[in-house]
Amino acid sequence: MTHSEAADHVTTSDSPSHYEARNAWAIAGDMVLFMTGVTFINQTVVLPSFVAGLTDSETIVGLAGGLTSGGWLLPQLLVASQLARVPRKKDLLVRAALLGRTFLFLVALAIWLLGWQRPPVALVIGLAGVFAFFCMDGVATMAWYDLLARIIPERRRGRLLGISQFVGGLGAIGAGIAVRFILSEESPWAFPDNYALLFGLASITLLVAVAFLNRIREPESPPADKEFASSRRVLALLLATLDRDRPFLRLVTVRLLSGCISVASVFYVLYATRELGLGMDAAGLFVSAQVVGSLAAGLLTSALQDRWGPIVHMRATAGLSAIPPVIALCAGRFAGVLGQRVLYPYMLVYFFLGISMGAMGWPYVNWIIEYTDEVKRPLYIGALNTLGAVTMLAPVLGGWVVRSVSYSAVFVLAVVFALSSLVVSLPLPNPRRGQVEG
Image 1 (tube, rainbow, N blue to C red):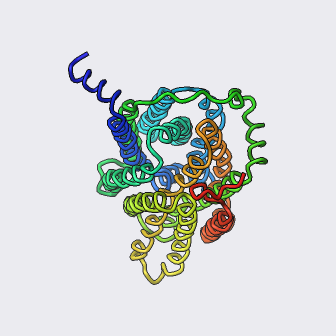
Image 2: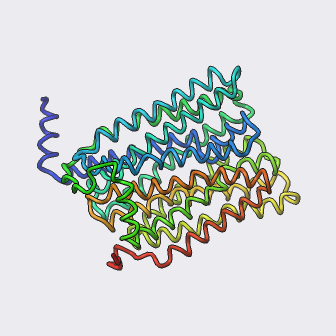
């Protein structure tokens, strides 16, 4: 052991503040690079435009959107039952992140090698790889949330998440500029090589982020109660928990309604390019607008979460999520008058989409963190997210509505889900103020 390593060991062991700072930097570093990396394969612009380049089916485009959310949510309940009895979560986090982020590199290779000669094969491999990435990210997220709750104090958590999201947004702006150039007519890469490059850049950036995760110093957690030891009992436990814990049942209902707002998310870019007459150059601008919205979401997370708690944060996000489909409807109404200038108001769709998507996940998890104890927390978070996998069908429904009715119909449906989420959240108790009722 060198002198510097020895000094680091002594300082870390003896100084909780150093321990906390090291972990905060690790969490922040991963968040910043993750936000930057996933921008290259933006779920509402890049991914649907890639799929639309290989198929004319709106249903398949919707399926692609559903695979991203479903892949992230589906494995989490079973993982939660295992995570609850694992004293250290860092190893699971690092391994799942490393495996999942490697899948994106394989997708990039498949697009580059097969995109020209065998588009259907490239599409299938691409969708499978994206699904596998989000599955592994869902597993990693369970460990990440648990670590966050144990290594970052409650009153500093919102500030750390908000600042990290803001800085990550700056990195994502740079990625958005790159996306705009790579997809533009001036780009030296034609379709589908341009998308192979984007998937490759995403994989490399996300793999670098794993190095920050590996820097986390994890404290020992208490062993879980025997109630959570068996994964075979997890569904029975879930049903019993929902029946016994009515506040949590209401939270799950709100989360499902808010998740169904994604019925329209992947179709904004198709509406712009196919109905409003905007080119793929606009897609890069949409990514940038969404990133700016994510920056605003970081400020929203910091202010609302720390000052008023997850309930106010949740309701504000539900209200904001109704704005993108309303703007899209208005843009369609005035497109004939504005012509190509419709691009500028339409960018507001992605600005508010960035706010609502960037702020949507945190209030539900933070509500659980403040509502329940450390042993039950993985089950509650896993249950919330796994039940939320039902919303993976929302984009598929959206594709069917677009094909059978119209784009306007799917935008109206998104508004209905957003307002329903807001209304159902009103009686939800605030754990921070001691208003929880068992």
